[in-house]
Image (cartoon, rainbow, N blue to C red; front, side, top):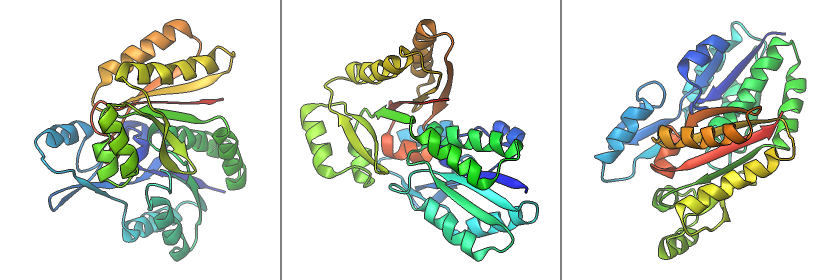
Length: 280
């Protein structure tokens, strides 16, 4: 059985790697005024943050159209028997449902749409595993079972510098944002039941980041074989500093750097920091 692996643009897997690993992608879009830009295709992350600085309103975001998803699956059906398609949490986007609906309209290919219940490079962790297993000729059912196993140890925490975008975009309740802005809280957030919710309310940015790193180090100190990613919103230098400090303490743990691209960056804003990890 020939199995394709697909994801959406919010996994933020660089184009070069997607091409090397034959990872297929459907893009979400960010909209400035009446102009829609498909992330990773029409606009780079650097261009997005530069454009954001001169834009007074909050851009909007949109999921792939069902027509685009259907066309993509029809193309895959010419060469593949099945597709494992990993997507950002269905609690914050309808992308997964769009792919499922498109799959019902396309003949000749079995579509296995997988809810990462997260986004960004945490989502990419699942994609890379699916690629590895497909090359080992695992069945779609075996691949999904492994992704479910990974999910048991998958952790993702992030801190936003300003809650305004998350609440205006409808990704966090207004009440929580008001509390945050009044108290100057820098909340640590995570996904619960596919939704973004506060994990802990912390007073300062530094303490919030230290709290996340502390949880990661606590897991590493148990001798677990982890894969870790440090994620930034237009602040690679800070992410690399976190990675460097962690590598000094735990040189044998595999780490990487990723970023919050246009769609996720719209909701989190600049200066957001995230850390994701799972036990291999």
